[in-house]
Length: 473
Image 1: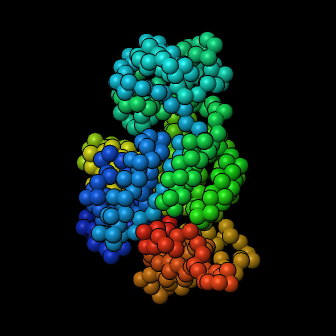
Image 2: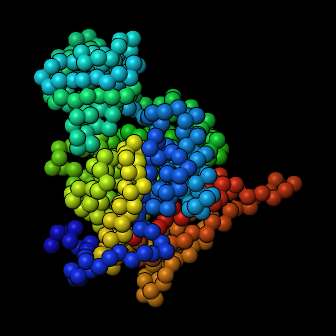
Image 3: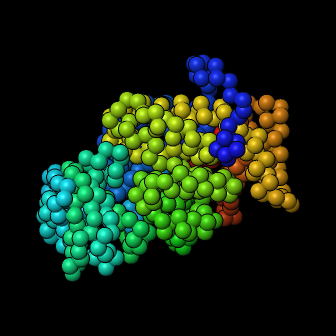
């Protein structure tokens, strides 16, 4: 029997498919990360997103200015107070991202079979014949026949906003490409992705460091999404940088795996990171389509066994413009939950999509339905077997607490914690009921006065991060 079948509770009553979903005090235990932007930054829309099930707000610094994102964050704080819903803050770095620079912001029409030149000369005006890029070393890494993808959201399923290029020749620092599909590029910046090519750009750029040390410190961010993580050393360097910023010592680092280089070093990255984001948009370009399912299942399994949160992206792209997901997308969300995903990250769907609230609500309902048929008993046994004996004392207590809670049909597991480690270990065994973490700040003294330690003591309940990624199905 296939492993995916084993994670279903059997037998499933077919009549349950027709039964309406019952309202629950707790939303789906799979978390939803919403990217806030032009279509989702007002207090009203953010409030609706929180009520619909968003528990982490992502701020994508690959576009926009810090002042813009600060206004959005202030609206988030207002929405949190009015709705009394908890929500963490995630800062998403730019990382080693190559970009096409379109200073005029005029739409650029590219026609199939025509040629276009990629040049590091940023003084050039972007047009259908030439595209200036922010990286000087592209020509050194490319050869005839290599593939390059350009677009604002990189192939969301509709190829009219992204373009596929094939390298024809390399002349000096310029790369001449043949356009493989007609598309219109709109906006000031477009992501450029060279398939399976090593790019000599730092994972944490100077721009990223500036944003983290100013905007990040000011707002005491809960999570750092480290874009284009390729090696464990990337995470170590980011953690060292955060530790020198004082208030961000407790910020959790989520390594964003976006290319084959990151997959190659996945095991080492997982050891260093606090969590993993599988960026299926870029990975889906770097990998053959028939290999995508395999890396997803393998990566999620490894995250589950390590007890570290796994976040999946790009599940309902069509809801950027449509009120309902496709049948394949709805199934994809459910399978992500059954495969072991802890959270779903929504990007363009909430950033610029027409239906941000409905998207969050729909994804939440699908996750909740999938959680009902998740085979927790099999998962528990598999995890215990993987951990082996002898267990550490804390792991033994956590696994025993989950088993006892299930046997007595407890409604909730309450965990008192100061570091969050105990809560995360409990969540590792995926209890069928929510885990409520009660955070106990550490007391410290300088012999003159007593004070609380920890980066988030003055942010509660706005950033009560312990309860955000420790509630799993």
